[in-house]
Image 1 (cartoon, rainbow, N blue to C red):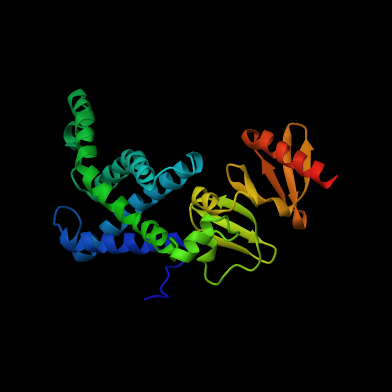
Image 2 (tube, rainbow, N blue to C red):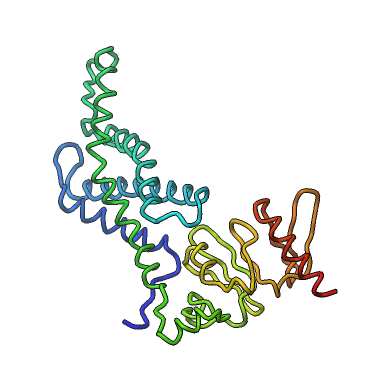
Amino acid sequence: MAGFTLPDREEVWITIIALLAALLLASHQISNSGVAGLLGSYAYWLVRVSIETTLFVGALYLIERYVADDTSSFFLYLCAMLVSLVPFTLAITSFDLIVGLPELGIDPSIAGSTAQRDSRFGAFALELVFLLDNHASICGLLMLPRICRRAMSLPVLSEEASVTTQSASSAPTLFDSLQPPLRGPVYWVEAQEHYVRVTTAEESRMVLHRFSDAIRELNPAEGMQVHRSHWVAFSAVESLIKEGQAMKLKIWGDAQVPVSRSYRAKVEERFAEQQQADN
């Protein structure tokens, strides 16, 4: 088990968990109220959990794009679960009506009456409450790959390695734990959703890790964060490029890293000092 690792693609494990959850629910919820027989029940739950998974994962990835990097996983889960609850309830209610299951107390004989329309709002609110625990549980299961992968990626440091790191060693703990080891010093780290792209002089690799955690593990004497999604090593920077109000850092290989407004003053100060030292 010491060499066991999960696949890099989180989406594969989410799909597997969603499939297993649908099969488990179907095996315990066989009904004669509109879903015909065993195969119909399994088909119903596969479609239902697929819809739920798509809405939750879409909400999660969208929220991650706009929140701070150091936001806790539980807060992201809670927001994505609540955001996806309403469209999930609407989708499942519509789906149940299509397959013939009674929903929202709709009576086809009086479907257009004012009383029937007024009662649907209250029924829909109750449906939200009724589906909340089921939706929260499924969404929690879908977060397991990320939780497990993050726990497995945490480096375990010996006492000697810990002392070395605390004494400003040039090898961060995250990058020491990678297998196979990185070739060459870290020049550029870029956030890409819930992964980071680590670039050295010899390779570029995607790693499942929070960008904010990676920044804390990098040596501040060797580089700096220049953007919400970018960290660069001082030794990798060839020149500072200004284009109107925009600023970029040109690094080796003609790559250009954007500098955001919030980091612009620090970048200018750092490279002004470096230019004076070179002169």
